[in-house]
View 1 (cartoon, rainbow, N blue to C red):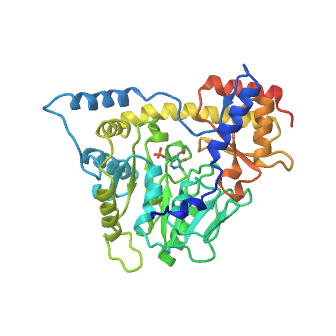
View 2 (cartoon, rainbow, N blue to C red):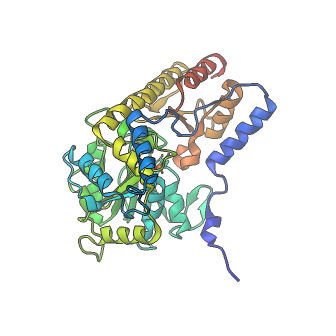
View 3 (tube, rainbow, N blue to C red):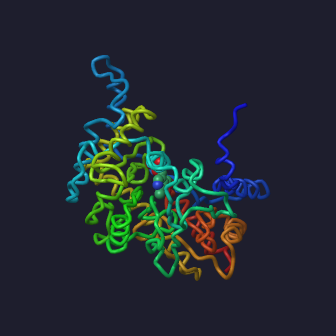
Length: 407
Ligand SMILES: Cc1ncc(COP(=O)(O)O)c(C=O)c1O
């Protein structure tokens, strides 16, 4: 008789956003007519920019004409887009060859799938708190033991606390695969060059691999902060960078991302180019390429014009972030993030747990936020507030917090 992959049963039974939705629905049922403001999920809300829309239309028009119609494309991505991504790096003095770029349908699938090319006994290290897919994909593939609450046996949790500026120290034992995300979801913290250098040095010394999630790179306005791990000397020897058009260009529903797998990256027992070839093998075997329409849009989004247009959208979200920060600080909360990242990370008042403060915010101010404990044990006692919203909703939430939240 067929059996299931029992690793799925190890996954925490509470899916964070399902629980938020359940509690929000229950509140709405009990309070008909009350306006609920949602500052929880990190979903984009502003429309696509003009040049991107034009390019997406162009993609559709090409498919409508027998002379320009295309079916499957290269699994690795449209050569024009890979070229544009390579140029995107070279403008920042980072040399990435086109065949080191793999276009995908988003950073989340790549973050989930990348582990499959590494040994099943690899030891995983994650930032705590972290975007859940890094842990969950390794749980499903059997690299962890059972969960003790939300802590899995066999995973190295690198604590991110107020004391270390929410960016961890390198592990003091050997980790094989290290997931880093900067700007960070959920804490909004951004690693400095010095902090990333320490991880690159660690990875080179231990022959570890860093999986660097740069999905929020475009929210960094401070020129001193790195937007790519490859700004760090030696990083190409030890790092894979995962990136996305979702947050930089509003492609959350369009679906487009990329990963860089450098040829220099080597691990135990492999020669130069092997890891790049393995990922190519994985993608050609299990992925049939990103949508050709989405890629046409991506070419516009990553052009100078597209980046300029999208900068305005990012400034809009960052204005939201500064309004939220100001409001929470005035309320007396201790607040982090929200300056080079679209997330604000706030300490709960008193000794309240993340879920207690979630309930209080919902009941008193009718504002939905995200409990930090859903992202890992060190998220307990914090909440995440997202700046991805329409200004009117953000302003209404702020007004309601000012008037109704009693701290
Ligand atoms: C850190 C991080 N990486 C990746 C993603 C997902 O990216 P994509 O939409 O490209 O799959 C998100 C989405 O919220 C995220 O927070």
